[in-house]
Length: 509
Image (cartoon, rainbow, N blue to C red; front, side, top):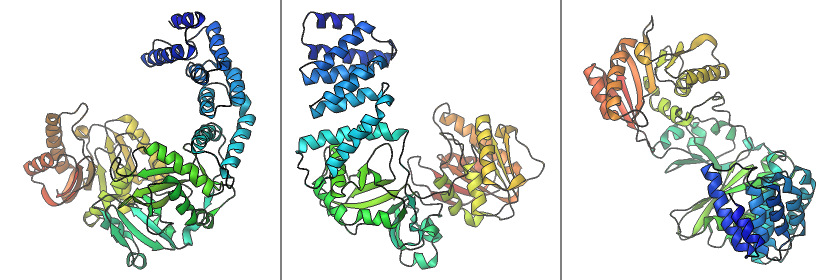
């Protein structure tokens, strides 16, 4: 298929332009499935490409290496590694590494680790004096090396110990539902809390308490007060280093060695201050490594902390740490999930909103239970005598049963593979809690109308008179219509923020 390109190379045509064309067609062929990686070129053709790694033209060497890697030419690993070691042009070196990633590089781990340490020492040296362009290429080379070497041989993570150290912590919430988290705080913490859109900020030396709140979507530590000008990545990195980020991390962790981090840049709008986020993050990360004297190391594949930069007014940024070093075990029962599963925080929000309608002695049914998340969170929110889950999808019920083993409560939890239309039970239920299906995929709106009507009819028969139904739906109009036909009285409703446009409606059955 690619013989024409090698004929052109043999005839003396410009190698760089030939390789560019060859690489483009090869990538299209791989994507289209007409060739298989590892079986693209003949041995003779691979030898020809390996020979071009010695070309006087740097871009020819670069393209030859990339083609060998993308083609999966594993027999040429030694040739690529040898070329990498000899390469003097910094902008080409990362291309050899990209190729090696897809080849057999393990025999060269020792040499690659040595090169990684070499670049780290150079980056961390005071006044290293690298020109900006050289620094950029070294940073790219270092990032690829770390991605390769740390993937299967990760350093030992630091262990979070800052549970009783006074910290300013931002508790991320769903916008509009901040009060659920605020109300879950103990009085002595709530008194000083500040509510922002989508967040509750607290100062506390009881992180062990706030880290257990189930309606929190994430935890950000504010280690630097105020904001700093973020237009120059190197200047911002210097300010963050001087603000004591390394000291902050060390006082809250046990362990040795550098802290590995990634950067998450949150802009108000595209190009408001930074028009090339990728370049900005690379420059900022390299500058922060230097400013921290190598005590902070950037890695996209292995990291203990996310440094979140949030744009405010006039090009200024606030800086936070999201830590991956403490054990967030709030939803540890979720061993098995599906793409359609209710998110655990969303389930916890639903239960917090509906808490006043729950009976601690209730037998509870979820007729669309999936892997059980909403039902399990109902169990956390209030007591119960039994939890029953029904779903037509056998794989979901299998996952729910596995989750139940971790969740506990012995024989009080039951899951059944069945269509809700066919489900019956010898005793009525006190509560029904569920996230109803929504239109999309195989379900049209007309299907949802029929399904909701059938569900409302079944719900009226499943429950005791005066029981409760707590229903999360993307079609509140259809549910209300179906419920009215069956005489179900609406008690309260809540609009749930998020892309699904859902509502939580509570009925008396």
